[in-house]
Structures are given as structure tokens and as C-alpha cells.
Length: 296
Image 1 (cartoon, helix red, strand yellow):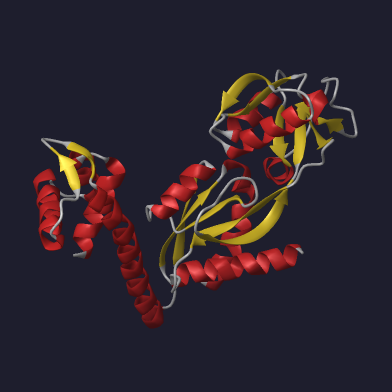
Image 2 (cartoon, rainbow, N blue to C red):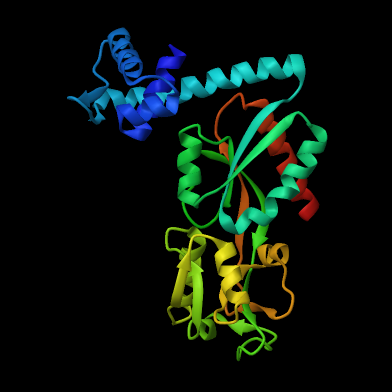
């Protein structure tokens, strides 16, 4: 039954029998037969289909909610039993917004020292995608903003505050300033993250509140691309303070604090709001709380 529920969750995500079968590592007839068996067991139609997937039925939408809960609980049970016998091991999957990538090692380093048999998979993703991947059981935890947009049903642990810098090069009229305002930055050409990223939405809102709008000449979903373009001498960008420190602010780069307002947003760990919590995730939550206490 658990395997059939896992097939159903994947089908609901992929919205294609062929793609879902490929993801699950089975043939399409095997997946189709499993979904039909699940429907027969429950006595309801779960999927509207002809020769291909169309949509979930109303009953299918409700079964999907239960399926995610049952599969998550089943995985948690197996992992907890294994951890009692062998200690913490396996893979811990973490989704991270691009601006928080410089924070990850502060969690994974101490964690790995305590639990050397746990390996990590760190994925860079937009904040909305992190919440969706948590809901779809694709990741175990996320690092994202806690205070700007709705998070839904998650457990959150604050980690650090995100402050903003103008990252530019010597020769830019603003480069030698001790600080620069959001209104002033709105008047110069910038390379920024794409609008699907929450950091970009924060930056746009701060500029609007200061009476301006971003003058964007290049967009990317990669902060490395933005950083490299700034180093080329033709662009400037807005970057979180901690990430700029991680990437390095050396000549010819200049980092100038942004003020009016002196904006701060909270970055933290989010995990599914489930009990009991998976042991490897519980250990990550404990590490996040310790890190936050150290920061305070």
C-alpha cells in the first residue's frame, strides 16, 4: 500500500503517467496498474484520465493529503527504528534560497562532526519551491525567509538576519560612500535576481517604498552570475551582507551598506510540522537552535 501511495504522490506532482513511471523507476503499465489497484482498494476514482492524465478527482485531492501524511510517517518510522539500531545515518536533503547559501555550512559542519554517517544533499531553490518540495516530501528541510511571505504549516527556527549591501567596483560614483540609500541605488543600472526569487521581491519593495524602481539591465537566478558581472566592472548589484562575505569583497569590489531604510529580514530553518519528527531532521533542528543561541 505504501508503494502505491508513493506512486500516486509522484503522479500528482508530474501530472503524467510516463514521467511519473520514469521518476519511480517502473514501467508505465506497472504504475497505471498500481493506481488502479489503489482506486479499487479505496472504492473511488482518484484520477480523471483517458489515454493520459487529466486531473485528480475531488476524492483524489483528499487522498493526496492523506497519502503525503502516511508516506511521511512511514518513512519517519523506518528511519527512527534504524537510528535506534545504528545511530543517525542516511541522506539529509536541504533546500536553500540562493541568498542563504553562505549560511549552510554553519549548520552542516557541526552536524557532520556529531553524526558522521549522515550525508547531505543541498539544493538551491526559490522560497516558493522550497515550501512545495517540503510538502511533496522531496526535501527534509529548508533555509528560507521567515518574515516576508506566508510559510504555511512548517516548524521554523530563526538563524540570522539578512542585511543588504550595494556591491560595485571602484570608479562607481557610489563606491566610495560610507552608506547609500535605496532611493539612490534605484537610479543606477543594476543586475539583480529574477522576479521569481523572494530576495528580488524584497529589493523591489524596498525601492518602491523609497520612491524609486529598480533600473535592471541584467537578471539571473544565480548569484554567482551577478557577482561575476559586478567584477567585470560594468554592473552593480544588491547582495546580502553574509553572502558577500562568503564570496569575498576584494579589490576592485566595494561593498556599501544600504540605508533609509536599514532593512533586515530573518532567515531560518523550516521543517515539516509533523510528529514524531524524523531523527535526522530533529538533530538538524537542534543544531539550528544551538546556532541561533550562539548568534544571540
